Length: 415
Image 1 (spheres, rainbow, N blue to C red):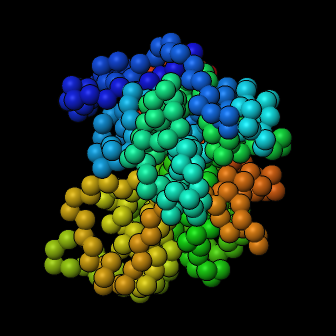
Image 2: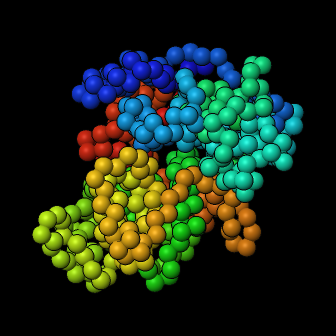
Image 3: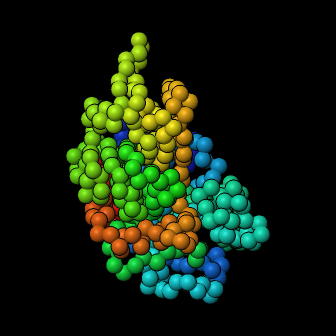
């Protein structure tokens, strides 16, 4: 099969961090670690595994950070390389193992990429606490080999499909997954909406587990699919309060309004005015940027995760407010944490998705997303702005990395 694999080495890291700063050819080609080539199909590791034909796979900001070697090295022990990238996956079932009962060939499925203790082949009495609760995004065994074997060798370490030596991701023509990772897509959900299941689930997981109260003013910071998906998730699960979306570009602002934002502001003066309208008063210290007292947003979803967005969230939060961190924050220099203690703020981070308390029962976040996509008529599929064939992956990565030039929101590869 044809696939895009990512190879990690010290020379490639040095090249990406030097020449790659000025050359996309170095970042997104073989010198930077990416290869488009033929590779053997993965085989089913066990009777409860499924072979899939990839229909579409998204390009995530995390993918860009990794292929440009700009991501924090802290998560390196929880991946294995070379790996076929792609963890936002819509696929069709081609073949099922003898023990598979929940899915049949021909069905469209969204793939939960997290590799749980169950996927690793551990018996249930040895599952870690996170996996036992249905939250494999924080699996304690991600740095260890599994017990299930691939080609006679224990399954390699790795937290997710897409950053895993033995489990190819969606940037290829075919892949395998464990039965427990597959979630059938309802017939009424379009392909463009279905390929967004994974990023939509991130916003939904946060909206369900760190919900605003009905009267809260909410600020969502970010212009990408996670931020816009969080706007959709808040409205889809019933939030009726004031929702302010901060976006950088006009087309992103239009999408935010169509997905449920009451107000759209740009970073800077417009965002400051939205804060003042909550009742906040501005004060100028002798040194540094102005600070605020009174008013503020009781809940802020930071879907960017850099020093600027987190600094803004801490300054814009009301006393005893909550900052929900969805952006992949890493090493942040010169971040002033004064308001964390001065306003008794709560900062809550979220990764991924899992089993949720939902309408009096329990359901996987992907199932919640699919149900709400069917129930609510929102233009979620419009987040997919660019689609490229697999062979044009360099153009696709360039579009995803250059929002101002391409006006991309979500870029998708279609094998």
